Amino acid sequence: EIVLTQSPATLSLSPGERATLSCRASQSVSNYLAWYQQKPGQAPRLLIYDASNRAPGIPARFSGSGSGTDFTLTISSLEPEDFALYYCQQRSDWPITFGQGTRLEIK
Amino acid sequence: QVQLVESGGGVVQPGRSLRLSCAASGFTFSNYALHWVRQPPGKGLECVAVISFDASYDHYADSVKGRFIISRDNSKNTLYLQMNSLRVEDTAVYYCARDFFERDNWGSFESWGRGTLVTVSS
Image: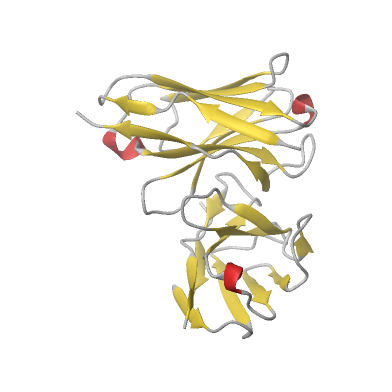
């Protein structure tokens, strides 16, 4: 099973700042990595698929990069609605696995 | 627009069975792989099972293999999850999710239902 490790566990920033979230895989997943945002009481929302492709309707301030084992989700300038939980997920191999999440909180 | 509506959750005793359903609309159901993803209260996400667009294959997480069965009825636009021999650790919100890609290119979850809560408790 491919283990995804996200860092940091919690990120405290202010609106307008840049957020950088990391995800490391225990083995190469090529570019088969996605990022999701989840708010309390809601289902996750797909932000980025295949490492760097924004899903339909996702604002341009969200971007993804990386390949192999190291990936990054960047939010260029935080909006109030961006403070939430973020998960990475790989589809390179079954079982599909998720990281444990990074909580992005308001400083 | 894409809609996925889960039903069938509830409180059940350990060892009993439950069947979840997911009614889909707003897209060509038979073109997409479908997934069940669960989330225990306050915890992370686990992909439980996937079924291919044509139901020719499926995969299960080790934690549910031999106990859960995923199926679909493409004539009714409905996904199912038969859950047998339920355990306390199966307690979670169960989401159905449609893949982003069509047919055999699967593994990214674009559309999600609101989820249905399954509580396994004596």
